[in-house]
Length: 309
Ligand SMILES: Cc1cc2nc3c(=O)[nH]c(=O)nc-3n(C[C@H](O)[C@H](O)[C@H](O)COP(=O)(O)O)c2cc1C
Image (cartoon, rainbow, N blue to C red; front, side):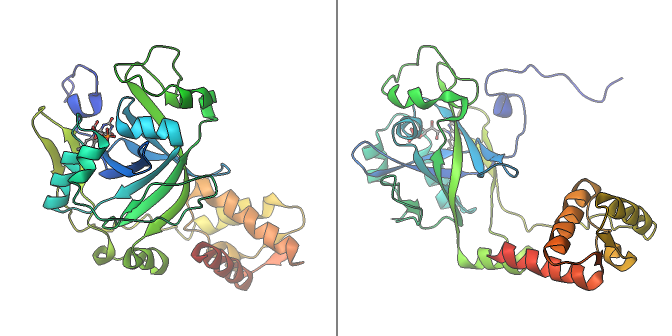
């Protein structure tokens, strides 16, 4: 017998049929008068994370919202991530309540705003939330799914008639998906320093976990708890032989010493070939045919310096 009960999957299943942990993000966009307006969003996740020519997020929203209308029209937004604070969450819930115009909403807005830092050559961008611990300044990629034409389909606030796109732009009568190219990541100095110098439990921003509307009267979220570090499985001695076997088969000329292979036994197997190939590329560029431990250190230092940049 199963230890689970079946649950009906209905609209907004992530909050009506599940407990789904989400971020709390204030999305700032440009209203038609050029002022900045803010809407609260949780359905916003990394989309392109590697292997593409840019990095991207995806945002899912009601197509009649100010945010969707402004994004369709201007293509620019900033994702402002806020920390756990009762007052700020109350304000986020107010900014997430439909019905008010941007002007009405923003006249009472408790968040201070400031200029962002992304390129302005394509036109103005919305201001960003000063209190955010990090901000992603973004541009909607309307080329994906050939959504360019959706830029002209604004103003239909009672539901948009077909055609719809599959995954970018106007995707249903009431829905929009936006694939957002990340132009800039801005972060408060202490959190930025922690990423560069190595995080500790005490250096994490106080990120709340939000569970959305649960019962049409309340929005639910949990307070921040100090994060815990769990050690990843450590490479075993026996792994050295298998790493050597893999390493010395990649290139007919460039080979690795045992000492060099020892330094990468902790690299997860799925990434090993990429790491070893990068080492071979470095060796070829530097006329090295036998990579030893000291070369691995140079390669690793170079990689760390590039990361810091
Ligand atoms: C914390 C929070 C998260 C929300 N997340 C979403 C979301 O991911 N997608 C969505 O369509 N609406 C979401 N809403 C509801 C929108 O905020 C609401 O539609 C609001 O009117 C949008 O503001 P805007 O019209 O200024 O864009 C959320 C509301 C809150 C309070």
